Length: 239
Image 1 (tube, rainbow, N blue to C red):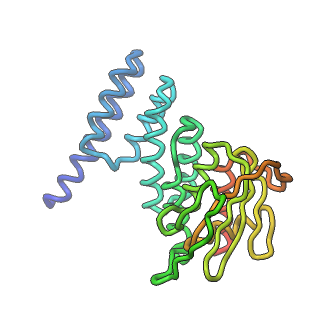
Image 2 (spheres, one colour):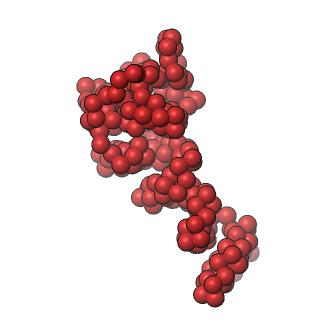
Image 3 (cartoon, helix red, strand yellow):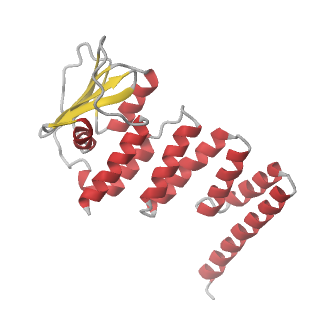
């Protein structure tokens, strides 16, 4: 057995031992000791999905939602690396449900780029400049992705229109108090329009606030659900 194989076996053994020890602690009603044992093992096995999943489960039972949410984010990243997008989807959604303050935009962008690498920003793409007069929020999509912009609008519970534009694409997303209720891009509206919005990865964006609410043409459980469902649909269309 090579040194590398021996090292790998030791790490696997350490993970298995920690999981077994944790089960014993839980059996004897000592969840704090189980959590500590798992965290100790995680220090030298930070990429272990079984360890993180078990920590997540223990935290949820113990109502430690913030820590459970952090584990969900870490797990989502690990699942994306393995092209396991369904589990990445579930963990990102769970993270948001556990802690509404968490920004999952980075995870959403990672899934989008992993699912659709063809949608990455083109090298040398022209940077767009738009008028920001009266805009509540504006920026460059190469620096701030659309998911970050949506997260800011959702957190601030803003009502308005988010416009995105580059040399070849443009679109609008309509919000009522931070909730996406409609979208339009490339002649498509509602969910179909939003699918085109997600494909806009370069150019600029700006939000114009509105005193009036918009008609509801998209009815999703949440913005996160809508985004992740859209990413799944884009992946299925590519297959």
